[in-house]
Amino acid sequence: MRYLLGSRFRGAFLGGLVGETLAQSSQPKHPSAGNFAQSVVPGATSLIKLGKLDIDDWLEIYQQKITYLEPSKIIFATIPISLFFHENPVKLHQNLLRVLKDWDSDLEIRDSTLAIGYAIAQSLTEKLHPQTLIPQIIAFIGETDTSIPQNLLKVNNLLEQRAGLERVKTELGSQGKLSNRIAIAFYYFLSTLEDFSLAVLRSIRHEKIGQQYCGNVYCPNISTITAVLSGTYNGTTSIPVTWRLSLTRELSQIPQVLELADALATTWSGVYKPGLNSQEFPNEESLMSNEKIPPCVYAAPRVIRAR
Image 1 (cartoon, rainbow, N blue to C red):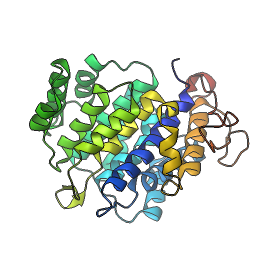
Image 2: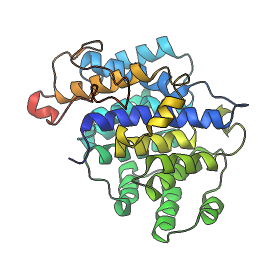
Image 3: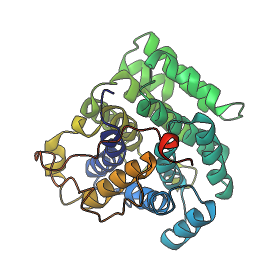
């Protein structure tokens, strides 16, 4: 395994936090409400507590924590599910659709969630290949009336042709439409696959100045989606220490989110009642310290305990 699984779980959560915060700091006049941490924490907590996906518990937690789930929150809220069911594409697809159905999400949100979830799963199983990922995502989404498959195909063609940024901006645009933003995020992720910081910086520069909308609601930042995808693929070691140090005040949720990532990884592996405050799974207090490391998780969950 190229990177420890625990590091990839952490990379997904920490990457999302960093990407969102950098995007906010680049647009100080239009700060968002910190959607990422607010979205992922309740769902991850439910999976850890029960060791499985319980739709009733899941919905109850979100109803208590969040009064209104806008598109970005719905997409980010499903990331723990993608992490937890990454080894089984059938269960992943079924469980994502179950949650989205109960949230009465529109088709663009559904297809966006499936695309991101599949990419996360491919990274965690080390099966992600840039040349085949997008056709596989389109097959995973299935028949749909949304423009997400067509936009992803544009990304695939642009990557094959090694198109320059100006052409990418022309063909994919910078509009607030959700399908465009998902495609742009995949472009920056796949075009700089091995470099987290470059992928995120390029995606931030692409962001349209001012607040971005999908209809009448706030859309997820391109940089946040890019950072989640790249963080999952490259793990926490890819996230620059200087970014974390310089954004310490803004990223006050880091300890909680990393603790959740560790507990989610150990729950997935079949560890009995890991507990969120157990010293067995400590927080990562500093990427510069060698004392705190992600838990080593290797075993397939069904080998240890059926789910």
